[in-house]
Structure formats: structure tokens, C-alpha cells
Image 1 (cartoon, rainbow, N blue to C red):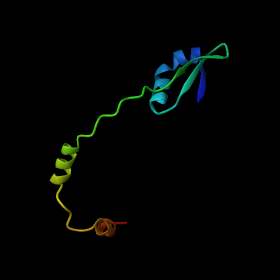
Image 2: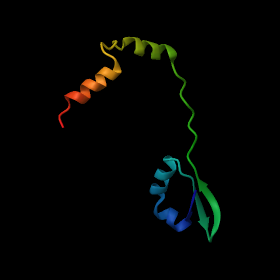
Image 3: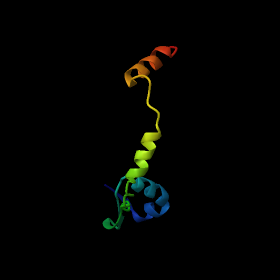
Image 4: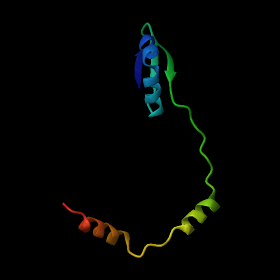
Length: 80
């Protein structure tokens, strides 16, 4: 957690908000004392629609080869 002077926070507010969105928490100080804290807002999670998820996975065609064989063929066909 970083501490930023109030004047610096005013000058660089958009940069501080970007840092908070990325997960940082920032304290704002006035005359050396902490007076405020910037933290991200907790967003509620969206519920998962199980029926929609099942219909999407059912629509995906099955692969003719294993994942290991696919990676090997991609690796071997690449030119170095």
C-alpha cells in the first residue's frame, strides 16, 4: 500500500485510479497524516447460466486428434 500526498493525488488522479483498478490500495496524506484511502469497488459476480454453458459446450465439435498430437504437429510444422 502506497501513500501519496494530496497535491500529488490531485495532479495524478487518473493514474492512481488505474493503479487501484489493477488491485493496489493507495492512502492519501495531508500534512503527513493519512486522511483517505483509494480502494477498488467490490463488484458482484454474475451468476453462471448452466443451461447456456451446456448448450455452448455441446455445440463444440469433437477433435479428431489428442491435444498432445495437435501440439506436436504444430511444433513440427513450424519453420525455424
